[in-house]
Image (cartoon, rainbow, N blue to C red; front, side, top):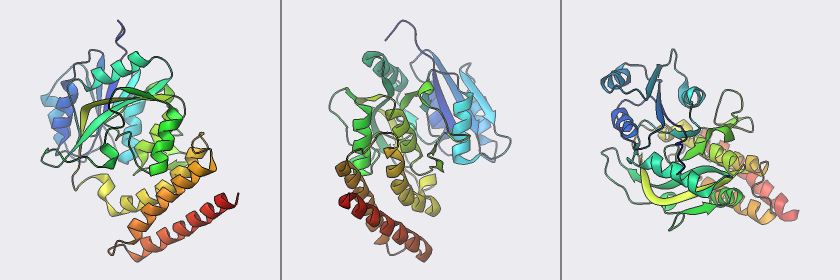
Length: 306
């Protein structure tokens, strides 16, 4: 690492009170010296504010939102308030290992210019904080520290329709590599992403540079019933966003061969079919997905004919 420690902003868009204190304590315990921690409180109550007051620290800035900003609005406000050269989102239900920021910044320093994000192995935990087994998305990307060409990693993600890069808590990225569209950091191609919000941001970063992957586990991603992604309306959006993301990604230089594009569309098609096989799927949602599925099939035929 260079003699100058570049400033890092850990940004906590807070809403869920249940796990917030553990998330904040993990930010406060970081070994990295040049750090600010910004908490934007979007919750209706005062419990988060009380926890912040109980843990005073000169690195910590707290903002109580005057009105509810919602998921994207709160993330965007955190980003706009940040002063760091590097950005580290921390979901209010996740946990950072003590040397997380230190190691991620070292990844930037070791691999020189042209890197826009550094990520690492992450571990899923349940609502009680117990570790869970890896799934395909959380399996290691590499056995050793690796620099991965941005378009190559983006294509890998899109070909499998799976976020191998990590959730917002996992990644450290260059602030100056992000130009938000309007007032939403997760707006991509005019669409406001929710379920795939993180991927929409990672792809924009990967279109501008490379990634570094660290094989050590540096963060914990909590799975619990109250997560935004588990709400029925958001779960439906996950399916439709997968299709939209493939098309938008091509505008950034991903999926430039017909074979890559077909593979990405086929991966989304499989996701559609898995969802349509669920017996509890409501009729309105089923009809919407079936229409999108037909549109996707038409696109696949067009690519094959071309």
